[in-house]
Image (cartoon, rainbow, N blue to C red; front, side, top):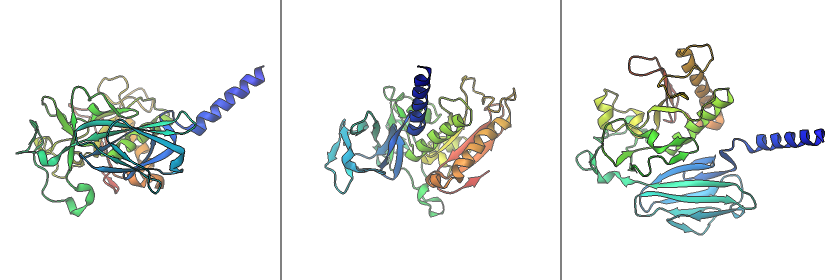
Length: 309
């Protein structure tokens, strides 16, 4: 009997190892220009935009797709085509692997077009002015085409398994609704950083996003550089804070909080950016000391090339 129990435990362990983390599925979906196996993922479209979906590592015929709203065009060349609703808001698409209990929830946020900005304001929320030119003509510095509307009703929505919409809001004071820009690629990178930290022995349920999106207005007000990645929605200042005391946790277990704890996070990010499998996620990284206002933290972004400071 004991041997049977041990075999059952071993088989369960093997199953868990093969399946990977509970928040990832066994298949990969290509969502626009992103490929992910996160069980929950978000993508951001303008009204009426068409999003191309496909299974990156299997035949489409082995999967079913269900749409909460928006039009789904019949599969063509092993691809689905999703047409976003004309109304702003967020909508759900479920992709199910047939013959299993595996599902991926894809959340489509229909944005408010940037063309709706008037004199630096969007529906009463101050955006400010984006640069009139692209930094060094790089495509990752193109101004946003739309903004995600954040309300008291949707702010708690999880964009990915461990990160909520409200975590990405700009710090500027305002009434609701608020607006934010988020690049889907950053969701992938945040989840990977969190996963690798846990694999390294750091027990964390999420990362504290000290500063994510910044409006150009707020970015200028705090004296930051004109082309800060924060205004483009793919730069975040992070640290680990499981006890919610606004101080970086003691990650290296030496009994104190110091820059050495930021080094733990920095090392993980360096490993991620150095892995050829993660070339799409490469970006900038900077380590910052504590001061009277904030604790130690790490800046990360997905600008498309390595930058270090």
